[in-house]
Length: 583
Image (cartoon, rainbow, N blue to C red; front, side, top):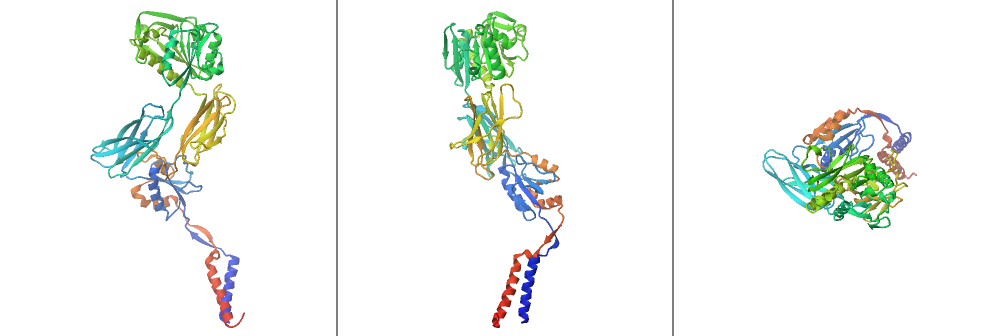
């Protein structure tokens, strides 16, 4: 009977203690939360080693979380958009000197035209001394196009390797450089290049048939970069035109569709055409090339602001430096040169009389550009310098037309995005009404993107819109298309790359030196720890955090292990009673 009572009492005491749930205070050491982060995929392995070193002492997170006590940055750079709390401690762990091969810099042009040569320059670092050979390969959108071997001698550790390729498709080209050497790993770096294939729409409008406008038009028509539309007024009742040319230059809506307007025999036009061209320059931000024929030219007077002009006839043709050179003997100068004039062609042999006299020149009109040919008979020398004459006008027309913004301009704050990453969008249009935007994937899937007016005012007759969206979850190429109510459209391509750890992850060039990570560490009560001294990081981090023991409540009865003695006592008391024949 005594044993039964003891077991019953013990079970009851355990049950009562569980109901009361007593609490006791005890000193405990809190494990601070430490975020281990890295900026590029090349530092991923280093970040994993840092996390393994710290996990026995601290609570480790590989993602940025609120309330983290400290940050440890693996590598020389900081993650994009990373902003540590002011009170957080930051340490940086940098790679040791024996890092093998690294791509320190990758230079590519921001934009190139299709079928043109795109220069690429890679700066590679290789450890060691003596004669070493490094192989640098150029990959465009995953396709290996070029491989160059370079030698490094003596104590040198760097080599700059020039590479080139010719883009064959418009849009974003992903440029990757792979550097490798015998006995060392492969280093990679990525960049992006915008390949354009813009065709400039050109209107050639002749007030009457002229040689100058005819031969300039023929020079542009032989270049596939130009889409030339022509209207030549042959008499008051008839005209010759190619394509949907406007009947008059006063048709402002039709004029806005062109990137460049070439005007010949403007002395046959009136004040209405001159006012329309000025509006085109100021509000459409367009470009106009004037090929004057006479002294009474209202268009020339209005666009340049100069009404007094002087004729200059030479006995012999004078060579003009522009393109491959051409000649002229009849010139037409303003009596007073307007301000902000930029010469586009100069005399081959400058003389005192040629000071401030330019055969072809350019000046701004509002946000647009007007080009004036003061060499009236330059077309006469085209037979002896056909290449120079045509090449000059093609290059000049391309330069001024390219400066004319498209009817719809779409810009992205980031062209290379990770899945789910947020980016901002800017849209400029030259027509009223709300434009519509949509995202189109290479698979054909389409999703709408909402646009809203920008709070900051744009220039006159320019409408500014903005938006933001998150990148799709599936890596690949996407096209952001914007269409206005008038039918004008524009687009921008973006590249969604794989997340860190994926095969197609984006790799930025490695930094040379401690970089931004070391600066962040010094600004946040931390320090820089070389990779070779990684074992000392836990002690340094604990000393910087200065975590003191805290009093925390301890409730022992909330442990499930108390069910074992409770069940044992209750079962033992029941077994003893059954053995004696009791219930």
